[in-house]
Image 1 (cartoon, rainbow, N blue to C red):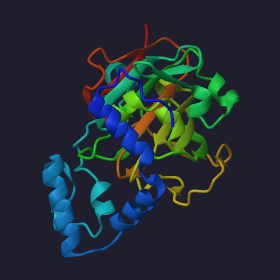
Image 2 (cartoon, rainbow, N blue to C red):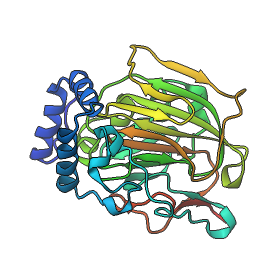
Image 3 (cartoon, rainbow, N blue to C red):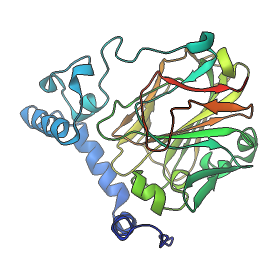
Length: 300
């Protein structure tokens, strides 16, 4: 077990230690199975409790009635009403869109190949991308954004720019919680948890002709992750890497289109190539974000 830094408050240190002791995979399998059960009135009661406990805004949902959802997963991956997340294209579409609802964990420049996680913690792009140094080299000196989706948030993930799917990699790993406390207390958290690496090539807009990546990071009780071109990626959870190539499939997604979803929530890490990116000046760690808002643009 890695040492939890002494700078982490005692309460958080105890939470992190508990994460090491939990049967992460067994708990995740159990919760994933329960979330897919059609339990009738019991499922509706659980959904109503969850809405109240976490303050979920159902007025935005395409289906606001909790009783209409057959499973908890159906509720958790609920669609929004048309127009609930208008896409903001200032400057003629030259800016990237925020891909999710949630909160900012960290963002900024990639220092050579190292990504900042929290005070005293960083990790390499190579580790994040499943040990592929050639792919990681594309992002040396680039930028990153780590975006946290809390239980109350909308859990579909959208395209920050138009792009073509080149590759997808499922990287097995741990299943630590990804809340702010574990980000401060678990070294290399996002590069050690199970994750799905999605590699794109921009087709128009600020990333046209360039490669960029979105990494969907799993967590404790995150039953599965899915993409629109593949469907459910996990389970299964084999011991080794799984790698899919799509360069000859011509799968293209527009800016703002859905690209994937979490069945129970987690984190997205976005990697951008070098190019003088400037993030939205309103962005700051822990600040709330909404899908479709301006995220970043190239410096003039």
